[in-house]
Length: 292
Length: 337
Image (cartoon, rainbow over all chains, first blue to last red; front, side):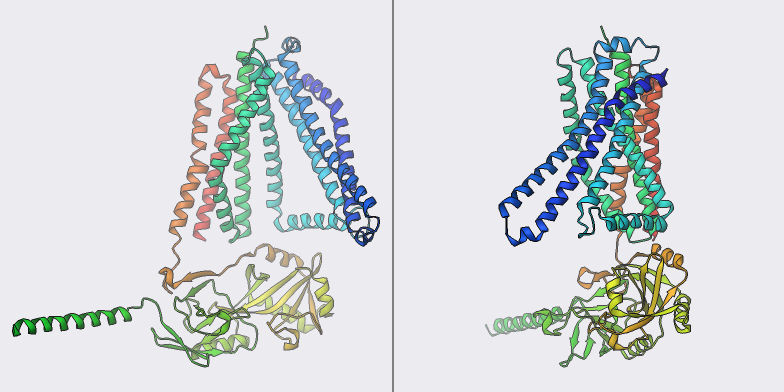
């Protein structure tokens, strides 16, 4: 039953997700090409010679505006996907639709778990697409000195550099890539956990203006974590920089070992925080949610 | 009255003599080594220990790179490049037969007679050790046999090719690795040879030591202006990749006499390590402990939901502690190294 629940959740977001991603990919090309044209124009002889300055200035302004609007579209696509997921969570559990949802032959824990996995999958896929768009923008924007639109040399040297790292570091590189993926997944789940907690708290605790209470709770958590994170994080950050400088002065295996362990620690801390928020949310759903 | 005058005069004399004596005592009580330089700047003398050093012209570019450089507090008036300040005298605390004055264009080396013999032998080829270096930042000690093998391949004509140095200079983009020769006292180095990376997995070796002066500029660096050099291709590229991956960061630690250090003393890092461990325990270990306790206790509080969820919380806290303990092991290894 959980599988069916997940399938429907995935399908309902997926219907719109691919449109948002295509928009993002299109916008990233638009950003890259317009900014690249802007750079080429600014370095061209026509511009530097001072002739037709007004026309060229207008063209450059237009290109700049296009690239800025395209960047905004990229951001909006991501926000759209997030909004889709979170609005669906709220509607399915805390509005009239919630009556239907909670009559299904699945426990509240399974419903929540389905929503969690659904959010995680789509957000991670969106991050992957965003990364691909960033790569596209890099290889198009970096001028290739008249050799073509795409900086093939840049791409080749980036790939070569990654392959050299794999050859030199081997096991460490693989381990650190795996740990990076784990940290990314846990960070995504933490951000989902915080939002779900805020929505759940607003929907169950507040009698009126539930959405505003939810947003307010999120803002409060965000501000508090920023303040405390900055204040408490300075000393550990300085410690990490100083100690890892010492590690880098010794042996490459010791340095990479220490780096991998720090990444593992980061994964554990972020996962712990994510688990904390998920546990709280689940507790509210199971004990405090009263749909009547 | 006469007696009082006599006693007063005697007391005054005693006080004056004592004052003069105490001033002279303080004048001689210079806690730091005193150095002097001859008028022609060719002789340096450590007046406190009575050791004389004469300037030695090495003929090739030699750098002073011990792992610890001891800097004496008292310097000497050396030349105008110091803008009226005294030039500081440096020494490897483990090697007393040489000192040097660091200059913008290179170090001026001063040696005792024994130091001169040893330095001459080093420059003539009596090398203590070899290092593979990434432009003097990362280094790995390599065996003399490795260098001998490279030289043998070069002399045998095994897979050799002649390169125009101008083309070499244009092709190479920061992919040059130096082979440094270091003397037995681990104080001085010169660039013995170099390995050029001219393509993926393509390493070529050249012996600088056997080249004439026309291949080097005024600072002693290899010049890419004219001439051609014979290089041999290194067959085992994987071995070079492995050596480069094993290089570690090299730096010279400066220890100053006026900080209270002595040439024979070691730098005291105890305070630094105490701080590192305190911050480590407070920031990385201790926070995990209450999380484990909370994760253990909460499942038993019925109001807070089912136990399974909180045990997941506890599991991640335990993982955090395990990672912290592993890092502690590496920190201990770092302290020992």
